[in-house]
Image (cartoon, rainbow, N blue to C red; front, side, top):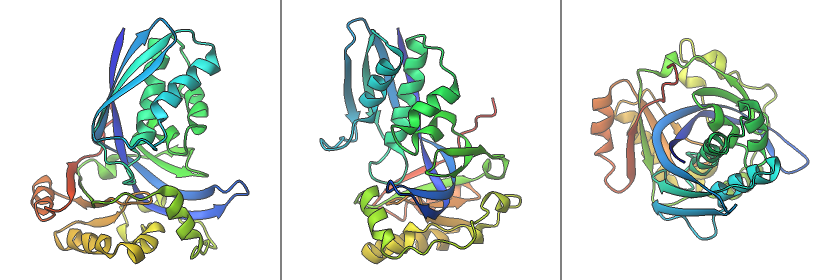
Length: 282
């Protein structure tokens, strides 16, 4: 048996750090939006218990944690699965860009093998497992538009209608950002808010001026070109521009697809993707 799934990227519409835990994790308040840029994961069952991964597309660094294999082996161990799987990942989402590609690949693995191995585990059970793989993985089990709190795994679904008509232009510079290093740099300047922001309350109508990402100021001090990208997106007509996750991708939100395409042509030195929110209403 074989299944092929899309593993979509995400952007963060605002990201505020709200606290630090004793285990080193940070708590946050952010809105996660699933977008249609995606990797493709093809999963085939194997009878010998082997888990094997091949990949094409964007090269995956040898030192990157392999969340696809890790997710498959976690399911095997957790539920006593004797079957195996052969997985092929077609990598299209830039790595180290704040778009959640690795986490999305892990979530797609859990969903695919839950079906192929006939585990019949609920979404909530998969989300509980996903938290052990990474803070963003639970979001990709659900997808859509979610308010994320805690370490990012406490999710509350939001009405996606305010975003359906927008086009999103991603601009990814020619460098990646280590999430661990970004948090380390942020810790040096972080001032926790006295009151938690209310991003969800800013969606009807969307009050763009209230959204901000704490990582932007850290990234701008090291990579000022990111600030230039944001400025150019806004000059090009974006209703909002911001950093996704801890970077390095900047995105602009546009009222019209044609405008986003025209502005994308103004960034020939960078990777650009004209994308849209994923519609899960069906």
